[in-house]
Amino acid sequence: MAVERKFIEDSISRYRLAAYLEKELDRAGFSKVDIQRTPMVTRINVEVTKPGKVIGRKGKTIKDLTESIQKNFGVDNPQISVSEVTNESLEPRLVAKNVVRSIEMGRNVRRILHFTLKTIMDAGALGAEVRASGKIVAKGARATRLRVGAGYLPKSGEPSRLVKTAHVTAYPKFGAIGVLVKIVLPGTVFPDKEKTKPVELPRVIKEAAAEEVEGNVDIESK
Image (cartoon, rainbow, N blue to C red):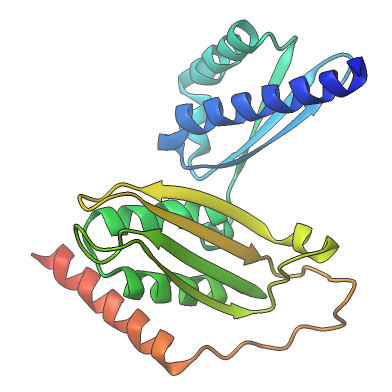
């Protein structure tokens, strides 16, 4: 029982630390964190779009962050390393945050999802799904769900562990909308599938994505 409790406490500690880092490094474009505990040190690798903001001038920011983790989470000898995100369109959390920002700006949710899906697939993903759930239509309307997907995306079993997932909530004026993004990264090998064929997106998604791009240009030009 003591061993099981230790595993539970360790998982809770990891979750709280990950949530803290996501909040603190939001402006640096936080994507994900990998925490590895060893008898000597705790290695923490964060992936962000702007590594310079994590490191800070002369390393002050990362030093302060290390001290904060050691003090607030009781982590002995934490060592933080920073990696730069190579392709934002293949990082589920960053993609979900972009969708959330667009929804909160009042843009058409369906077109946003279509545009996002096309962007992910154009980046080389083998499969993807973008889902929005909540008060999408207007104030007083019933909660609904919109979903777009393409490519190969296993839903259950061991292959589903290879799917990268992120969930972020938008807060427009009509009510909360949950955004779920799932991505199968390029080069992923599934034991139940020999080869993934190239994906041809439906015409409706391509047209909606084009309209979303035109809408963004019009908004920015005003």
